[in-house]
Length: 117
Image 1 (cartoon, one colour):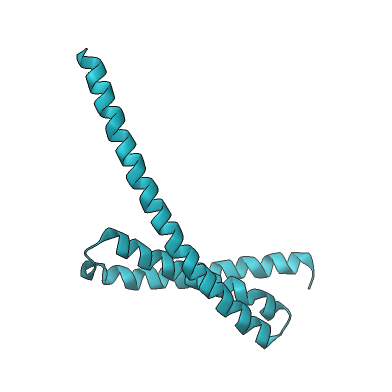
Image 2: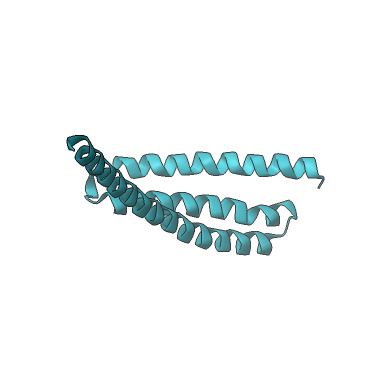
């Protein structure tokens, strides 16, 4: 397979994974009212997207080489890593958001005190 065909194939894999994750997120959105915690909801969304993208991109090499074992093994490995990465990224982003919010409130208070002086 030439480099151009690999690039086209990987682009198509990305498009398919994006469409699949979009469908899963739409389904999750319809049940979001059942989850009371924002972090849990974001973790589920990040995990599902990581799982889907990891599976599709992990199995791509096996598909390109027409090797079913490599495709399944790569897909499962990619799905596991994508799942962990999706959850980890959401948790890190949540912590970063909380820290940024805290810094913004400290800045606001400092500015208010400065203006009062």
